[in-house]
Length: 111
Image 1 (cartoon, one colour):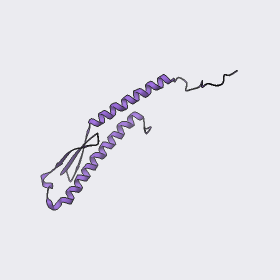
Image 2 (cartoon, rainbow, N blue to C red):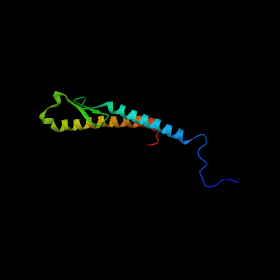
Image 3 (cartoon, one colour):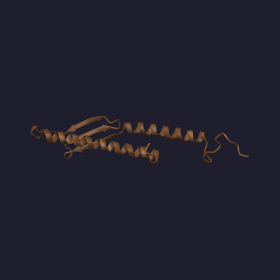
Image 4 (spheres, helix red, strand yellow):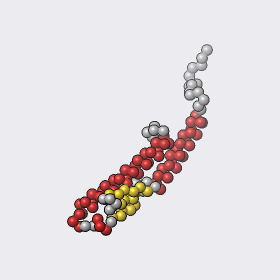
């Protein structure tokens, strides 16, 4: 006669210790990857290189370079647009790289 009252099932070949070890390894790898991403730099440019922006993997703007020929007071609006475009490009590259690296670890699970 079958016993009742406790969970005796589970996934064949898997025990909680193995699952926890796998989880801990994955957690460590995620943390290592996040630290590596923080150290990276991403570059954006606009206006044929007249404006160059550098952002860190920590989502911080770290450097702005403006070619002296782009400093025409009559072209203030164009310069502002180039700065925005270069920033957005650099941040987009950073986000894409971060998503790609994390996806490698999570296998596309969306974690």
